[in-house]
Each structure stands twice: as C-alpha cells, then as structure tokens.
Image (cartoon, rainbow, N blue to C red; front, top):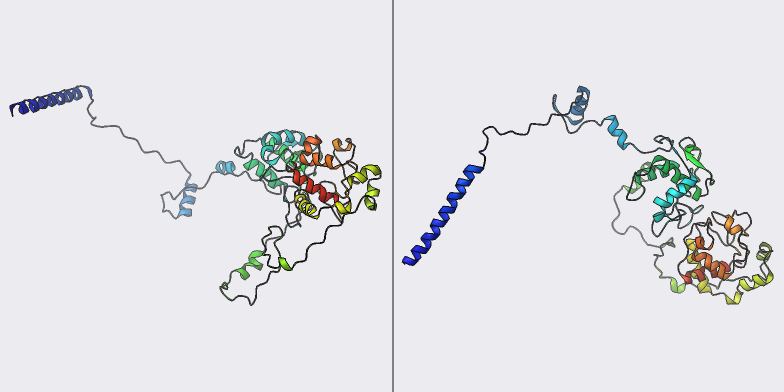
Length: 398
C-alpha cells in the first residue's frame, strides 16, 4: 500500500508542477484581450444616382429608400458583353484580313479540328464543300452550302473560337479566317481582302434558302391537342423508308427480287468516253476500262456507299455536272485534269498522264500528298478495300 501511495503521490506532484509552470508562462507572455477591440467597419454602399435607385426599386417592388435585388446595368457593363454581330453588319468592328493571312492563322488555330482546307477532321465539322447537297438525303451543311449570313460565321469565330481559347483572336485575325473560309468554298479569289467596309457585299449562296417560321400559327394548334393513347389508327403501314439511317424493318425483304447486276460499258463501245478521252491512247483506255463480264456487282455496291464521302463535291452518272469538284464519269482511263468546263488547280493541270487504277488509288489515299497544292480538301481514304471499291464504282460509269 505504501509503495502505491508513493508512486501516485510522485505523479500528482509532477503534474501539479507542470501546470504551475504553464500558467506562469501564459501570464507572462500572452497579451491580455483589449477592452475595446477593433472591428471591421461596414462597407459603404455604392453611390448610385436617385434615378437608378428609383428604377431598381420600381423593377423589384422595393419600398422607398430601399434597394431591391440588383440594379440596372451600366452602359459600359452592357458593352462588355454586347459582342454579337447582326446580318446587317451592326456590331462589326473596324478591321480587315486577307485570304493569304487567313490561311496562316487558320492553319495555326483551326486546322487541327477543321483540316487545313476546312474539310473537317474526324467528327469535327467541315466548313467547306457541300454545294448543291441540301436536297440530298444526307446534306452537307457548311458555311458555303448552308449558312445564309456571313455575319454568323464572323460572330461565331469571334465569340467562341479557337476551341479552348475563345476570344483570343484579334479582330483582323477573325476577318482573315472568315476570308479564308470563303476562299475554301470558292466564293472569293485568293487575293480577296475582307473588311468591315465590303462585308455586306459578299453574297452567300443560301441567302434565300430559308422561310419564315410560322409554326406557332400553322402547326402548334394541331400538335397541342389531347393525344390519342389507343386505337388511333385502323391499320399501321410503312409509307416511307429511312434510307439514310437504314432502320426501317425488313419484313418484306424475302419477297423483294434480287437486284439485277450492274451493266458496265467497255471503252470500246462507250462513245462518250471515246469522245471525252480523245487524247488518251487506245491502248491505255483498253487496259484501264474493265470489261463488262469482269465487273463485280458486290464490289460496285460497296463502292457506291464509299462514294457517299465524295458526293458533297462530285457527281457521277446520268446528268452529272461539275460542282465543287469535277463530275467523274469516265474518270478511269481518262487523262488527268481533262474534264471539260472545270477549273483545276495548277498542280493537276500541269501533271499530265492517265488516271490509271494505280494512279487513282494513290490520289484517293492521300490527295494532298499526291498533288501538293491541289484544291481537293478531302483528307483521303485509309482503307485499301474502300479505294478498290470506289474505283470499281467509278469504272462502272465509263
């Protein structure tokens, strides 16, 4: 018992000594709390004219002498956000930019997503091409083919581009980029300079392609009625087929007769080819034009699907015309840059030679690598099977 008392007694004395020292240290070294400590003063309210106070109170329902929620924006505050540009040119800043400068600025800031020739990369949108496709099942909507106002292009680039660095471009850079986009759509020449002074002189191809939206008067009353929930029709029939999406049920597929094999004319019996390729030797034409009995209907059908990537700029078949690119009837076995009425780039015009299967394959795989400086904006086909298929499809239009 005595040993326990001695042990606990010593511990208690030691603890008491430590506490005594702590109190003494605090008493000597920690300042007393002041009798009148300073406090933060209230922030003075902003000085606002009595007219603004009245407007604020009136708009928020606050009583006399009291602020409501917020206040009317000042003119300089509105100006900082009011950056939009209207179709009539309202909001355009003073400035200018050339196609030549625009090509460099576009390459540095835009090409990574939209391609060097505004043709689009992967799923990023294409800004050029699509001329004459708006009536197609799968239209290509670009600045040149679809947008009715040039101000929309200027405003969007100025407000939102480049991606991730919006509003870092100068006004002159925006003018230059828009000028280059116009050039990529063959709407201006390579020496064109866009400015606030000639902005409204640029005519957009689809300026008259829109109608007034009158759905509120003509259609809303039809839609906004009590919906039919059951037995709404006596019978349900398929009246149209979703050809682009390919989602229409195929119950009738078994009863559909097989498609007849495509008929391919040889160079020997095709008068149009003989006339269009007068400068091509008979030997080259005979070698390059596939014989009718050698045509593979399955390969031609596959090529027709691949050609969907080309038809934004090219046409083929009956009634084919030159568009952004030349019509391609008789292209296999024809002389390079020989389509009548189409203005080729200098590199293709000076190249010479024949569109053999091998030459066409090299061009389709890498157009800009094959003919540096070509106007063709397409990035190229990556699959050898796709190249073979589209070549067979084009050869069927000899």
